[in-house]
Amino acid sequence: MTDLTRRSLITTGGVAALGSSALMLAACAPAPLKPTPHAPSPAESSGASIQRPPAQIPVASPLPSGTQLTKVADIPVGGTAAVTVDGQDILLAQPAAGKVVAFSAICTHQGCMVSPAGGEFDCSCHGSRFEAADGAVLKGPAVRPLHPIAVSVADDGAVIIA
Image (cartoon, rainbow, N blue to C red; front, side, top):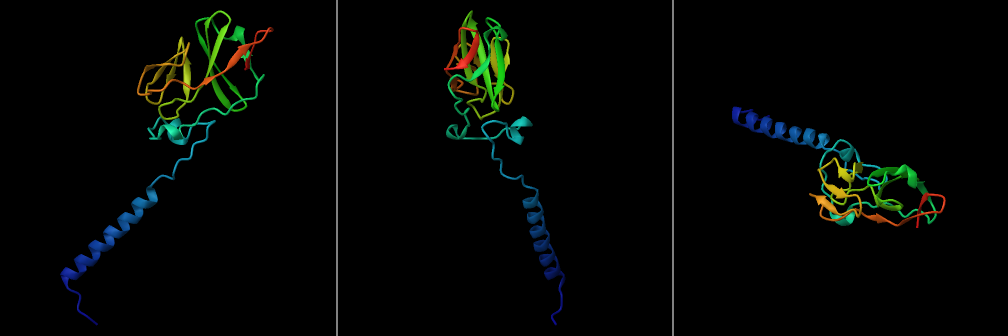
């Protein structure tokens, strides 16, 4: 058996402490996030910043033509509204009487949810603001407009997917 010196005890103890610390830190790391196009990820729900390349930002899946979203009377002239149809959040605006526009409620910056705010749409994650009439960026950090959804107003006043 070899004699245990003070130096070898300290060296061995230090290496063991570093190794166990590294294992504990690795165990505390969060699981990878995998958001769906219909719901914010846990990080988005908490307001945490997540970095995604633009190609990975989800957009709403196309709804079938003729799908009713709401009635035109439910959207104030000059105002905005939000609806959820088949699990998809959709933003609506009526910039002029009888003219309705729609956009995906997914922010083009990092994929957070966007909400109506008077005559605009706001992203609470990072403060981006969008024009309700055309989805254009009013305030960054987003640089691309909201994804448009083609809609029309039926004779009975229903707002439908075109």
